[in-house]
Length: 406
Ligand SMILES: C[S@@+](CC[C@H](N)C(=O)[O-])C[C@H]1O[C@@H](n2cnc3c(N)ncnc32)[C@H](O)[C@@H]1O
Image (tube, rainbow, N blue to C red; front, side):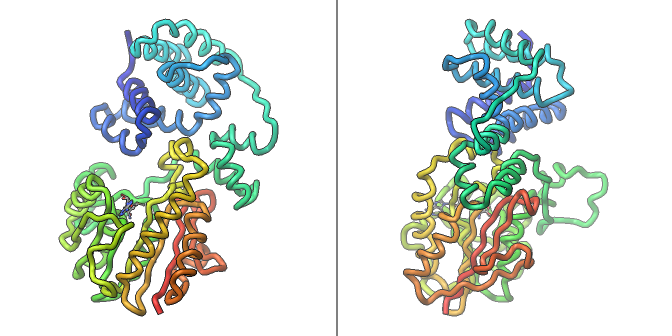
């Protein structure tokens, strides 16, 4: 039975994403480090491409099969269709044979004939899809759940939502920044080699923008309340290597990653602590000049990097998240000195997690006022918040609010 290592890895990753609700960005590096460079590229493409087109692919499958399919059969069909419909360098027979072999490897032998027949038909004829309305068309063509498209249309309008959903399926640029270890001579080294050595750090431009707005002055005391894996904290610490920095997080595993990352980047000025920021924080009140609350959120601004987020989310998640965000923000605010700034950011596009959290916070805390973040004018909203959008700014979608304690 012939299955390429790239397809087998991708098949296992896609199954784990569905069963464990795991993230592709966490699984891909684990599998890819064991693959050759060529297989790594194919595994990456197959996994992310299949995820980015999942609803569209399932709609194509529905034209041929009406019964419920076992997960492994469905995933091997999805992978086969992605290769046939979206990749032009893979011969159809190879996509079909390998999908059939994946089904056999998963011990779903009775489905081999079905997978073979459906993929053959799809390779011979284009399927015409019909849509009941514009919302369904955007939802299926861009593979986003209908409820999410409806929600975005209510917030951003039809045209902008169509652009956003399309941009979410594009491969983002590989953004990176220098580290404390960076040397100036990068010649003849690949970005991956440099990242492995800690001389550069891969970080989306949107995330870098949040860190840039912190604008720390000499001797100002700074805390990053939800810091792991320390992308923003390590960037701020790199720019201010004579100062000490504090960061904390709930998740021990993520804190370990943050610690290793700071070390790899050559930073000695970052102290990390584990806590639950929904409860009282282990610092004195009124002791920090600047505090970043980069809150846990739905991540709808990062779908380009994490395509599976759209399938994990449910409509009522936002209310739960906004309660958590408000609690963390309120707790953090107590640690801030008078005159200090509380920076609230998320990588969510949803008003419930952004504007509404700030409005609720200000209702309970009249000693805070909104001030404008130090950021390029083009990102500023009229309420003095800042927002970035994947379809407009070619970076992840972030929200930033700066609250001054008066
Ligand atoms: C958006 S991520 C932070 C990303 C980080 N600031 C960076 O730039 O690398 C949100 C973080 O909040 C943490 N978190 C979730 N609930 C928390 C809680 N109750 N207390 C503290 N941290 C929490 C998560 O573990 C996660 O690491």
